[in-house]
Length: 203
Image (cartoon, rainbow, N blue to C red):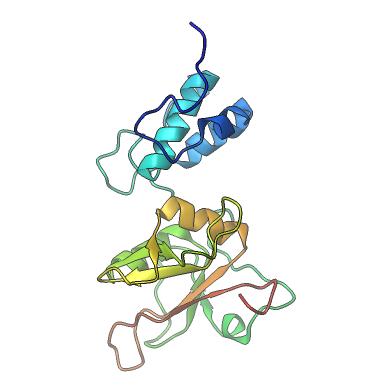
């Protein structure tokens, strides 16, 4: 049966299957795996296209059969194992921060400035404060997210919620560091964080 042109996945109107079909099987398999899709090694190209299209539409969190928990979402250590990224414009804030490379690590003291690239550490910190991954609409370039933010509590005007998968893909692509606090020096919970780029001063 001949393939028809256009989007063959009716529930994914904003996903370009034409773009997906131009990718190699290896590229599709890699994206599917990153989205938490299981059984990718045995999939043919058409199956991979469908799986990736569905993963993009759903945010990549539910294609592995998970029940909506952490499994199947793009969390973990990240490509740098939680270790900090350094470069020509590494900030003083980063140099004076305690590096956190695991969710089990604790701040040395209240109010300590912390820094990490560990996906699970960042996700747990954000979700414990009711924060969701977001971007600033209009700052995108090509198919990539623009300015990254976290949206606390109620949705904030001027921010667009995105998936953790999208957020972390951009975070890693730009080699950003996450500088934050668990508690203020008075012991109260802190929502302070900044995203720092060691490669350019404007972060």
